[in-house]
Image 1 (cartoon, rainbow, N blue to C red):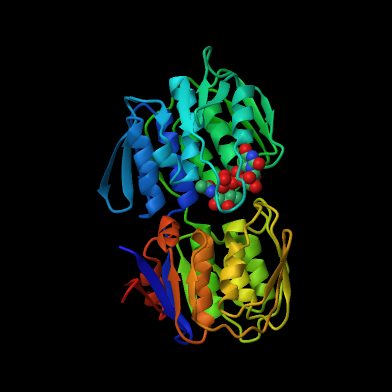
Image 2 (image 1 turned 45 degrees about the horizontal axis):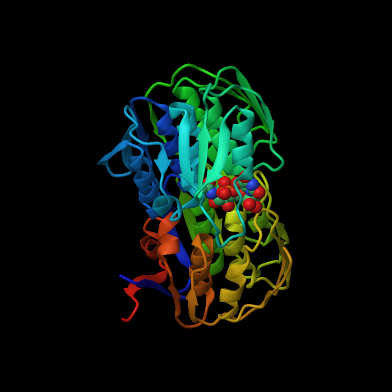
Length: 422
Ligand code: UD1
């Protein structure tokens, strides 16, 4: 069914929203289950489309997946039956390339479709491949697939990343845990979801040192044991709702995540005048009527997350004057700016800089979600707009947000999903 999200301004928000486990962690933990010849149990797994796609990718490899309770999945990777992640699945979700490292480590052979183009920049995987080659895999690209083979197994080596790529760091960690000898990954990414992967693997018997730092030392072990693990709370889902509160006005509590994981986002929101109270497992945010402009530059963690850039830009259209947003992580991640422009925003793009004019009167309009975070940000913009905003292509939003509309409704937002022709 082709659905849209219709959103209208409805005054200040109040109440509490609970976030789910992190999409970007759950997907990698699911892939990491390939390393374990037994049943892995994950709890706090978000009920989102990307989790279903990863389940599809793993099922194609022979993993038997079940969901004995809401937000809990079991993954039995005792008997892998294939080493091929087919194009039909990888094309749906780039993150399915996370099976490359664990599959080659466990099976000695991985055949993973190249993900192809993506609408937020070229998103290459050259670092994933060159890292695996340093560990001894032979990689070649044939018929649109990366074929990775380890005739003599993987061997620990120093690997230095030219950029702290999240996906390359994760693939290398997962490849190295079962390698012979010690791998040292330098210039590693240190997003909280990577720390979650390290915790998961270490509990299963891996020996990874250097969590939360840029240098990881991975001492290969023979085998990992089945475990149960709770997925870390989703800082980006949390950040999205916090910005919703800042845009719509009022006071809301967003819980189920570690506020330290949103450090710089919360600091920037405070600089705009919002009042943020950091709680044990969440924050209470009170919006300000006089939003001060702030400049933002996206960077690898602990820098400002690129996954919060669009939501923040929507908010900054309501600031008293202009802000500059610099995107340093992805090329072409400003498609959102064109769409919000249809609502009256004035955002000028020059290379990887965006000048966001403040003091803009937003007016509701039909808009198209350009990607996952851009889609959510358009809904947030609709909270401040005059009249109804109708966001289409909301399958993007469903990829990463569970019950997005229901959660916003629960704090008083006027937002609903409708069939397109209603
Ligand atoms: C992950 C997150 C995504 C987030 C991003 C940055 C998941 C499923 N997705 O994506 O939500 O926005 O981190 O925080 O976890 N690059 C290369 N060569 C490579 C790998 C990356 O050039 O081999 C470049 C990419 O094109 C991009 C930049 O490095 O410009 C960052 O990519 P990376 O950190 O790898 O992001 P993802 O793992 O794809």
